[in-house]
Length: 212
Image 1 (tube, rainbow, N blue to C red):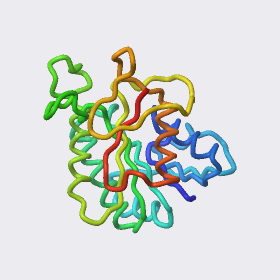
Image 2 (cartoon, helix red, strand yellow):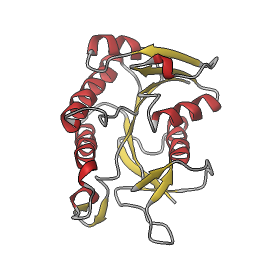
Image 3 (cartoon, one colour):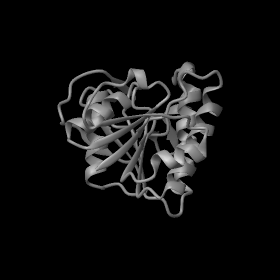
Image 4 (cartoon, rainbow, N blue to C red):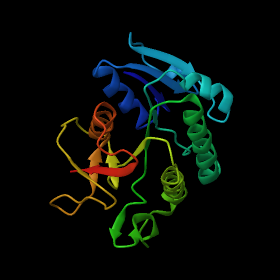
């Protein structure tokens, strides 16, 4: 497939890029700094600015799938920067007529009890709250979409570098816990779950999660 990955040099995006290329897809990597991208026959480097909707729409046109790994972590106002950027991406995907839109979500909007999300618990780290609230708003925006075929994949609470095992569980809106009561997934296995969804749609117009 022709896959566009927005934020392909980031913490999650770089692993999504590696997984997509390993599976033989042609990837357009839409990033701010193309010098950070690896050299690969299946890779097209595209310098992009997500706030320029007209240009972004043109860059996304002709792709089978767009995967957004856009992040606002480096911004001053993380929440507003992320929500504004994501809104531009969402508008551009629709304007470009791309059939499928996959989104890297956050764990903060997953439930730990009925009606109680992770981000609203007293122990949630303050330094990650703005980012988590931004990711929750992105999910809310997607759920208001009437025509776009989207899926959003929330990681487990701990998304850390590790190994690509290909062995994990999928869930819905609830935080997944392993046998030790921990919520975790490697970035590598997160990428496997996302590319599995790209190749074989199982969660159309849904949020899902992945964990051990």
